[in-house]
Image: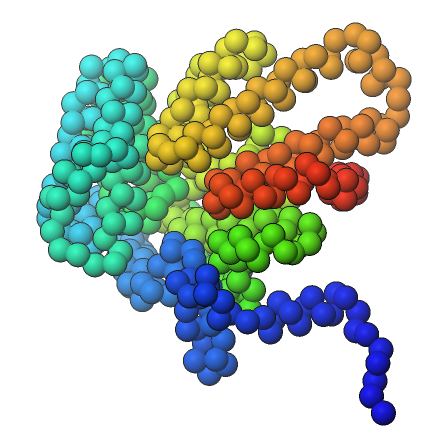
Length: 460
């Protein structure tokens, strides 16, 4: 006698995810052999993650371990020279991985922007820095500069553009801080120490020069009570997350599925929106782990690096929407806050946000998807300011003062529901294809009432 009772729907979904067929034709390029002993295939769509924690894992561990060892020895024997040791080891590591031509190219950009910084004109430093950055984002300048680097290996393009891009941003930070220095100039040696700090060199995060200069040249290397324990705990936490992500990539192909539009059109609204949301959460986890590993090493060097990004589940205003706090701190310090002042004037805020997102678009690389993302986020940030100022007028301010705090929170949750899912949608566009973003937007606009109740529950 057969059992005819149906299994619960959530259990069927779980089995479908775990035991799903990874042999679809659209999955061939990004779903590759994974764990040999279990026969599970792995989602390899994320190049950055694969490079860090799979393909070149041994190289990354070797280079960063060498930095930690030499930095510790120097900190014990000659702490006053530790920033110099950081520079020497970083230059040797870059030379070993990319060759002398690449080091020469980096040094030429450092010398150029250092020379311009001696004039002490902020606008000139900005123009020179952004122009130099643009040469790594547009042809034929990209190919011309890439031609100086000989040899070919899988990681070379990523290291080339990462190192060059972050070098220009660090040189801009140095130049702008030199403009603010009233007595004399910083030496070019300080710029080289700042730029060739290996943990930050290729992939960031960006730590502005003023903070790095003070912390890297501080001879007092005492730690607070429990600080070393917290550093070790942070390292173990990142290791645990790396293992969890490895399991995720072997059982849930959330990075590859968005490329299969035929499959996506046949799944439910909840599954589609959940997939988009999981992609954003994964990108936050990736950024938190990659920056977290680097931050752990820099904390061992007695530095206070930029904090990890804020989780997507905690974002409901555009002013806090950033996955890279280093770039965010850079743009806020030198562009957004400098031009926007107190951020209470609509015109000043508009100019500041346009310039900020313009530089962000150049940093990410000009393209239609980037331009759309920048425009929508810029509009969202300004719309928040316009709305906030509008509701500070009468009679709205009196109404809010008259109602209870819980009711005020519910009303804000209604407005923040739109904000939250708009942020999600804009970043889905940045992380996935335009077709996937359009499909998610269509489902949200036509059948978004389910998400509305989710957001109100999350806010309260």
